[in-house]
Length: 200
Image 1 (cartoon, one colour):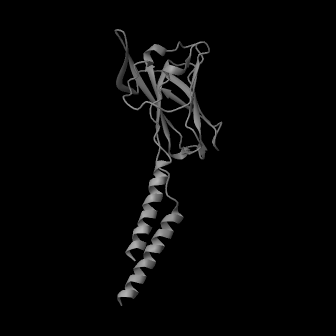
Image 2 (cartoon, rainbow, N blue to C red):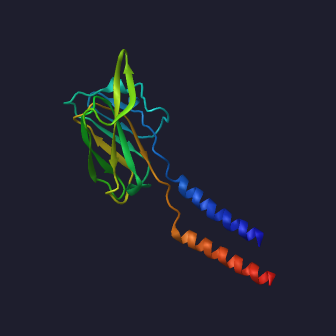
Image 3 (cartoon, rainbow, N blue to C red):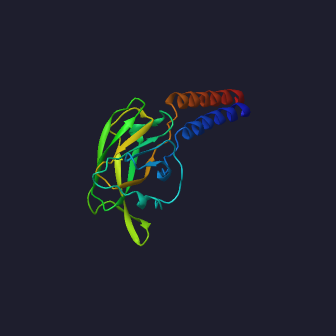
């Protein structure tokens, strides 16, 4: 009976650990190595580089107001529940940025939302340094709770903005299906009944 109880607990906790590991947090994306200055756009195909939000390369890539620019970031699969994701876009410059984010792939592909940073607001308290000049890092949080479904990446249209050094987001673990919890609690109830009968 103890072995059965141990197996049940192992299965329940193993299922939860598996579910929690299928959606990792989105860490910072360093775009320095994938910049294409000739077209004014750049792409990133992988998430890498955890650490400080101060990106030493960011200040080198401050865009003029008339340069078209976009960032495509792929997360490697349709595993993100959009209702549980907020994206934070970090800009280097003076604030006053606006643009759109478009979801790519999955069941929410093509959906768009706008974002903006008022001039002088949303300062993170961090700076990027280029020579003797410090550039403030500003953040815009994009609430994607209005969308439903999944996506495999995002496209940020920043055509009227300065630079995008990094992109981050937070995701909640994939919840364990209710059926697993119900089945597990039902088994535990049966084990309890069996123990009572055995002791009686």
